[in-house]
Image (cartoon, rainbow, N blue to C red; front, top):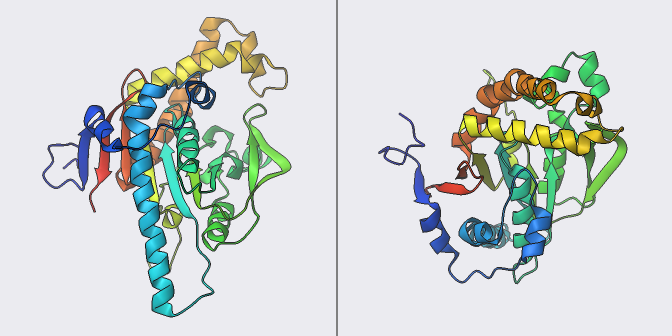
Length: 319
Protein backbone atom coordinates (compact mmCIF):
# COMPACT_ATOMS: atom_id res chain seq x y z
CA UNK A 1 0.00 0.00 0.00
CA UNK A 2 1.19 3.52 -0.79
CA UNK A 3 -0.14 5.80 1.92
CA UNK A 4 0.80 8.88 -0.10
CA UNK A 5 -1.74 8.12 -2.81
CA UNK A 6 -4.90 10.23 -2.26
CA UNK A 7 -7.17 7.28 -3.08
CA UNK A 8 -5.51 4.98 -0.51
CA UNK A 9 -8.15 4.01 2.06
CA UNK A 10 -5.74 3.74 4.99
CA UNK A 11 -3.61 6.80 4.37
CA UNK A 12 -2.88 8.90 7.48
CA UNK A 13 -2.96 12.03 5.29
CA UNK A 14 -5.59 14.34 3.92
CA UNK A 15 -4.83 15.57 0.40
CA UNK A 16 -5.58 18.97 -1.09
CA UNK A 17 -5.02 20.55 -4.46
CA UNK A 18 -3.13 23.84 -4.34
CA UNK A 19 -6.34 25.68 -5.17
CA UNK A 20 -8.28 24.02 -2.36
CA UNK A 21 -5.39 24.58 0.07
CA UNK A 22 -5.34 28.28 -0.79
CA UNK A 23 -8.88 28.63 0.56
CA UNK A 24 -7.67 27.85 4.08
CA UNK A 25 -5.77 31.12 4.35
CA UNK A 26 -9.07 32.71 5.47
CA UNK A 27 -8.29 36.26 6.61
CA UNK A 28 -4.54 35.69 7.10
CA UNK A 29 -2.96 38.96 5.92
CA UNK A 30 -0.21 39.06 3.31
CA UNK A 31 2.61 40.76 5.19
CA UNK A 32 5.34 40.37 2.56
CA UNK A 33 5.94 42.72 -0.36
CA UNK A 34 6.92 41.70 -3.85
CA UNK A 35 10.47 42.98 -3.35
CA UNK A 36 10.81 41.07 -0.08
CA UNK A 37 9.66 37.86 -1.73
CA UNK A 38 12.20 38.46 -4.48
CA UNK A 39 14.93 38.84 -1.87
CA UNK A 40 13.90 35.67 -0.07
CA UNK A 41 13.56 33.52 -3.19
CA UNK A 42 16.39 31.95 -5.10
CA UNK A 43 17.33 32.27 -8.77
CA UNK A 44 17.05 28.49 -8.87
CA UNK A 45 13.79 28.26 -6.92
CA UNK A 46 11.53 31.09 -8.08
CA UNK A 47 8.59 32.13 -5.95
CA UNK A 48 6.24 35.11 -6.21
CA UNK A 49 3.46 36.75 -4.26
CA UNK A 50 0.82 34.58 -5.92
CA UNK A 51 2.55 31.44 -4.62
CA UNK A 52 2.82 32.98 -1.16
CA UNK A 53 -0.94 33.66 -1.22
CA UNK A 54 -1.72 30.23 -2.67
CA UNK A 55 0.37 28.05 -0.36
CA UNK A 56 2.30 29.81 2.37
CA UNK A 57 -0.42 31.93 4.01
CA UNK A 58 -2.46 28.80 4.73
CA UNK A 59 0.71 27.17 6.11
CA UNK A 60 1.27 30.17 8.33
CA UNK A 61 -2.30 29.97 9.65
CA UNK A 62 -1.98 26.23 10.29
CA UNK A 63 1.33 26.61 12.12
CA UNK A 64 -0.12 29.45 14.16
CA UNK A 65 -2.81 27.07 15.41
CA UNK A 66 -0.20 24.44 16.30
CA UNK A 67 2.00 26.93 18.15
CA UNK A 68 -0.97 28.30 20.12
CA UNK A 69 -2.03 24.76 21.03
CA UNK A 70 1.50 23.98 22.19
CA UNK A 71 1.58 27.12 24.35
CA UNK A 72 -1.80 26.24 25.86
CA UNK A 73 -0.56 22.76 26.71
CA UNK A 74 2.54 24.29 28.32
CA UNK A 75 0.37 26.48 30.56
CA UNK A 76 -1.84 23.53 31.46
CA UNK A 77 1.20 21.48 32.43
CA UNK A 78 2.40 24.27 34.72
CA UNK A 79 -0.95 24.07 36.49
CA UNK A 80 -0.79 20.28 36.55
CA UNK A 81 2.65 20.29 38.20
CA UNK A 82 1.78 23.32 40.34
CA UNK A 83 5.04 24.86 39.16
CA UNK A 84 6.00 28.42 38.32
CA UNK A 85 9.62 27.78 37.41
CA UNK A 86 9.06 25.87 34.17
CA UNK A 87 10.85 27.36 31.15
CA UNK A 88 8.76 27.75 28.01
CA UNK A 89 10.40 25.78 25.23
CA UNK A 90 10.60 26.88 21.60
CA UNK A 91 8.32 25.36 18.97
CA UNK A 92 10.63 23.56 16.55
CA UNK A 93 9.71 23.01 12.90
CA UNK A 94 11.77 20.47 10.96
CA UNK A 95 12.00 20.87 7.19
CA UNK A 96 13.45 18.17 4.94
CA UNK A 97 13.72 17.18 1.29
CA UNK A 98 16.18 16.63 -1.52
CA UNK A 99 18.93 18.92 -2.72
CA UNK A 100 17.63 21.48 -5.28
CA UNK A 101 13.97 20.99 -4.29
CA UNK A 102 13.61 24.42 -2.68
CA UNK A 103 13.88 23.82 1.07
CA UNK A 104 15.93 26.95 1.72
CA UNK A 105 13.50 29.29 -0.04
CA UNK A 106 10.52 27.74 1.73
CA UNK A 107 12.28 28.03 5.08
CA UNK A 108 13.18 31.71 4.52
CA UNK A 109 9.66 32.65 3.41
CA UNK A 110 8.06 30.84 6.35
CA UNK A 111 10.48 32.47 8.79
CA UNK A 112 9.41 35.91 7.63
CA UNK A 113 5.69 35.10 7.63
CA UNK A 114 5.78 33.55 11.10
CA UNK A 115 7.74 36.47 12.55
CA UNK A 116 5.04 38.88 11.32
CA UNK A 117 2.17 37.40 13.26
CA UNK A 118 0.40 39.99 15.45
CA UNK A 119 2.14 38.50 18.51
CA UNK A 120 5.54 39.23 16.87
CA UNK A 121 7.19 35.95 17.85
CA UNK A 122 10.94 35.59 17.67
CA UNK A 123 11.71 33.18 14.82
CA UNK A 124 15.14 31.76 13.99
CA UNK A 125 16.33 29.57 11.12
CA UNK A 126 19.21 27.10 11.32
CA UNK A 127 20.34 24.69 8.60
CA UNK A 128 22.09 21.38 9.12
CA UNK A 129 24.92 22.37 6.75
CA UNK A 130 26.93 23.80 9.62
CA UNK A 131 26.79 20.43 11.38
CA UNK A 132 28.57 18.65 8.54
CA UNK A 133 31.99 17.39 9.51
CA UNK A 134 34.72 19.73 8.18
CA UNK A 135 36.19 18.71 4.82
CA UNK A 136 39.46 17.80 6.54
CA UNK A 137 37.67 15.09 8.53
CA UNK A 138 35.55 13.98 5.57
CA UNK A 139 38.69 13.50 3.47
CA UNK A 140 40.45 11.62 6.24
CA UNK A 141 37.45 9.30 6.65
CA UNK A 142 36.93 8.95 2.87
CA UNK A 143 33.51 10.60 3.15
CA UNK A 144 33.81 13.49 0.68
CA UNK A 145 31.81 11.49 -1.87
CA UNK A 146 29.13 11.00 0.80
CA UNK A 147 28.77 14.63 1.79
CA UNK A 148 25.12 15.16 2.70
CA UNK A 149 24.62 11.50 3.64
CA UNK A 150 23.69 10.87 7.30
CA UNK A 151 27.21 9.70 8.20
CA UNK A 152 28.74 13.00 7.03
CA UNK A 153 27.06 14.95 9.85
CA UNK A 154 28.10 15.34 13.46
CA UNK A 155 24.79 13.96 14.72
CA UNK A 156 25.91 14.26 18.32
CA UNK A 157 26.41 17.99 17.87
CA UNK A 158 22.96 18.31 16.27
CA UNK A 159 21.33 16.48 19.15
CA UNK A 160 23.16 18.59 21.74
CA UNK A 161 22.11 21.77 19.93
CA UNK A 162 18.44 20.80 19.67
CA UNK A 163 18.38 19.52 23.24
CA UNK A 164 19.73 22.85 24.48
CA UNK A 165 17.18 24.76 22.39
CA UNK A 166 14.30 22.58 23.60
CA UNK A 167 15.46 23.00 27.19
CA UNK A 168 15.11 26.77 26.87
CA UNK A 169 18.82 27.45 27.31
CA UNK A 170 20.01 30.94 26.28
CA UNK A 171 22.66 31.72 23.68
CA UNK A 172 23.01 28.30 22.05
CA UNK A 173 25.64 28.28 19.30
CA UNK A 174 25.28 26.65 15.88
CA UNK A 175 28.23 26.28 13.49
CA UNK A 176 28.27 28.21 10.22
CA UNK A 177 28.74 26.71 6.74
CA UNK A 178 30.07 28.48 3.64
CA UNK A 179 28.64 27.41 0.30
CA UNK A 180 31.44 29.37 -1.33
CA UNK A 181 34.25 27.32 0.22
CA UNK A 182 32.01 24.24 0.56
CA UNK A 183 33.12 23.80 4.15
CA UNK A 184 32.29 24.58 7.76
CA UNK A 185 33.75 27.96 8.77
CA UNK A 186 36.22 27.29 11.58
CA UNK A 187 35.47 29.26 14.75
CA UNK A 188 32.35 30.95 13.35
CA UNK A 189 28.95 30.44 14.95
CA UNK A 190 25.45 31.87 14.96
CA UNK A 191 23.89 32.34 18.39
CA UNK A 192 20.29 31.29 18.97
CA UNK A 193 18.79 32.88 22.07
CA UNK A 194 15.50 31.32 23.18
CA UNK A 195 13.35 31.87 20.09
CA UNK A 196 9.61 31.30 20.16
CA UNK A 197 9.93 29.29 16.94
CA UNK A 198 12.95 27.60 15.40
CA UNK A 199 12.97 26.29 11.82
CA UNK A 200 15.57 23.53 11.43
CA UNK A 201 16.17 22.76 7.77
CA UNK A 202 18.24 20.04 6.10
CA UNK A 203 18.38 16.99 3.88
CA UNK A 204 18.09 14.28 6.51
CA UNK A 205 16.31 15.94 9.43
CA UNK A 206 13.57 13.28 9.44
CA UNK A 207 16.03 10.38 9.47
CA UNK A 208 15.15 7.78 12.09
CA UNK A 209 18.01 5.26 12.01
CA UNK A 210 18.11 1.80 13.54
CA UNK A 211 16.48 1.05 16.87
CA UNK A 212 18.58 -0.68 19.54
CA UNK A 213 17.80 -4.31 20.27
CA UNK A 214 18.07 -3.80 24.04
CA UNK A 215 15.35 -1.15 24.18
CA UNK A 216 17.64 1.64 25.33
CA UNK A 217 16.64 5.16 24.35
CA UNK A 218 18.39 6.48 21.26
CA UNK A 219 17.30 10.04 20.38
CA UNK A 220 16.63 10.99 16.77
CA UNK A 221 16.83 14.54 15.45
CA UNK A 222 13.11 14.50 14.69
CA UNK A 223 12.31 13.70 18.34
CA UNK A 224 12.79 17.41 19.04
CA UNK A 225 10.35 18.58 16.35
CA UNK A 226 6.86 19.83 17.13
CA UNK A 227 5.95 19.89 13.44
CA UNK A 228 7.69 18.59 10.31
CA UNK A 229 7.51 19.53 6.64
CA UNK A 230 8.82 17.63 3.60
CA UNK A 231 9.33 19.35 0.24
CA UNK A 232 8.63 16.82 -2.50
CA UNK A 233 8.83 16.51 -6.29
CA UNK A 234 9.29 13.82 -8.91
CA UNK A 235 12.84 12.52 -9.15
CA UNK A 236 13.28 13.63 -12.76
CA UNK A 237 12.17 17.17 -11.92
CA UNK A 238 14.68 17.40 -9.09
CA UNK A 239 17.35 16.07 -11.42
CA UNK A 240 16.59 18.78 -13.98
CA UNK A 241 16.55 21.50 -11.29
CA UNK A 242 19.90 20.30 -9.94
CA UNK A 243 21.58 20.34 -13.36
CA UNK A 244 20.09 23.75 -14.20
CA UNK A 245 21.30 25.17 -10.90
CA UNK A 246 24.79 23.76 -11.38
CA UNK A 247 25.09 25.23 -14.86
CA UNK A 248 23.91 28.65 -13.66
CA UNK A 249 26.33 28.58 -10.75
CA UNK A 250 29.08 27.79 -13.24
CA UNK A 251 28.40 31.20 -14.78
CA UNK A 252 28.10 33.02 -11.44
CA UNK A 253 29.36 31.86 -8.02
CA UNK A 254 31.80 29.28 -9.42
CA UNK A 255 33.70 32.09 -11.17
CA UNK A 256 34.86 33.38 -7.79
CA UNK A 257 38.46 32.15 -7.36
CA UNK A 258 37.69 31.36 -3.72
CA UNK A 259 34.88 29.00 -4.70
CA UNK A 260 35.47 25.31 -4.02
CA UNK A 261 33.97 24.66 -7.46
CA UNK A 262 35.95 27.35 -9.28
CA UNK A 263 37.63 24.73 -11.47
CA UNK A 264 34.27 23.85 -13.03
CA UNK A 265 33.84 27.40 -14.35
CA UNK A 266 36.88 26.84 -16.57
CA UNK A 267 35.41 23.80 -18.30
CA UNK A 268 33.42 23.74 -21.51
CA UNK A 269 29.66 23.60 -21.18
CA UNK A 270 29.56 19.94 -22.20
CA UNK A 271 32.31 18.99 -19.75
CA UNK A 272 30.66 20.90 -16.91
CA UNK A 273 27.32 19.26 -17.64
CA UNK A 274 28.96 15.85 -17.56
CA UNK A 275 30.42 16.69 -14.15
CA UNK A 276 27.01 17.80 -12.90
CA UNK A 277 25.38 14.60 -14.15
CA UNK A 278 28.03 12.56 -12.39
CA UNK A 279 27.55 14.42 -9.10
CA UNK A 280 23.82 13.91 -9.37
CA UNK A 281 23.96 10.20 -10.19
CA UNK A 282 26.74 9.19 -7.81
CA UNK A 283 25.94 11.37 -4.78
CA UNK A 284 22.66 13.27 -4.76
CA UNK A 285 20.40 10.71 -6.43
CA UNK A 286 21.82 7.94 -4.29
CA UNK A 287 21.28 10.01 -1.14
CA UNK A 288 17.72 10.84 -2.21
CA UNK A 289 16.79 7.21 -2.81
CA UNK A 290 18.59 5.69 0.17
CA UNK A 291 18.12 8.29 2.89
CA UNK A 292 15.89 11.27 2.08
CA UNK A 293 12.84 9.93 0.24
CA UNK A 294 12.26 7.12 2.79
CA UNK A 295 11.69 9.80 5.45
CA UNK A 296 8.86 11.47 3.53
CA UNK A 297 6.04 9.52 5.25
CA UNK A 298 7.30 10.75 8.64
CA UNK A 299 6.40 14.38 7.85
CA UNK A 300 3.31 16.13 9.18
CA UNK A 301 2.96 18.20 6.01
CA UNK A 302 4.14 17.35 2.49
CA UNK A 303 4.35 20.00 -0.23
CA UNK A 304 4.49 18.37 -3.65
CA UNK A 305 5.88 20.58 -6.41
CA UNK A 306 5.30 20.55 -10.16
CA UNK A 307 7.67 21.18 -13.02
CA UNK A 308 7.57 24.97 -12.59
CA UNK A 309 8.58 24.76 -8.89
CA UNK A 310 5.03 25.67 -7.83
CA UNK A 311 3.26 23.49 -5.27
CA UNK A 312 0.55 21.36 -6.87
CA UNK A 313 -0.61 19.24 -3.95
CA UNK A 314 -0.52 19.38 -0.16
CA UNK A 315 -0.75 16.37 2.13
CA UNK A 316 -1.52 17.02 5.80
CA UNK A 317 -1.30 14.31 8.43
CA UNK A 318 -4.63 13.63 10.14
CA UNK A 319 -4.98 14.32 13.85
